[in-house]
Image (cartoon, rainbow, N blue to C red; front, side):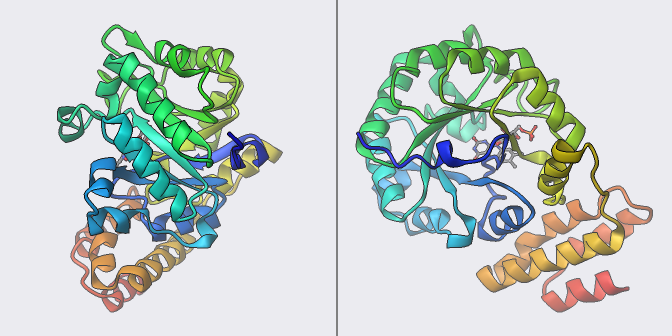
Length: 314
Ligand SMILES: Cc1cc2nc3c(=O)[nH]c(=O)nc-3n(C[C@H](O)[C@H](O)[C@H](O)COP(=O)(O)O)c2cc1C
């Protein structure tokens, strides 16, 4: 099938915003794009939700053209529903569709989705095959290094002959959840086994760590997640460091400016809900400064843009 593959056109190393449920809304994706992300993933979207026409689920996929290239990540467990959902993703004009084989959250695990799928490699194969056959946009997967005795490499070897474009490897096992050391060797072996794009992910909080992952794994790029919470400029710092070996730290007044920009964008896109959802982001922006705990106590109670401005201007 003739694929329109944006992945092959991106300059390497590719620095991506990894999928994050509850975080990667339009405002955050736009901000990350502005600060240097080469590609942004959506929050995970339920294939069942799309099948049953849930308005909320369709809402999650919406995007603006400035976010492109934009990849919608799907979760579920039924190949036929992945195929239908991927067609919806294609219909709205997203650039790619991604399959979640990595989420360990109990409510996803319970419905046989996310990382639990890695226990059934034949089902993974059927899901990837059905999705690839359903659309012309490129299909990617996001996996972990393993669950129980099954490794990420086992999964890659099972699906690698399908027309998959990219794999993001969260370099931790199911058992490690979101903490612990990233297994760079696992990414390296997957890069050797798979002919398409491989993005390493897990534990990148600094430009130096980004560089280490790229050098040690030979991956085509990286995905940033917790490291960009309250720090969307990490994309730019990583790019500056990879280019010149140097990058600039952001001072408090620059951070205030970005936080206000983020809040204004969220308010514009979601109104009052956007302000309430900003509370957690504001706490992340001002973590670790002197007197920050007092400031954060106030920020997690904001109700309006005016509240945010007043607190930050003091
Ligand atoms: C709040 C949060 C939500 C996440 N949601 C998703 C998701 O929807 N889909 C997914 O594949 N991974 C999700 N992840 C996992 C991240 O994409 C990433 O693989 C993981 O956090 C490891 O990278 P890090 O160490 O840089 O954070 C989420 C992580 C966090 C912290």
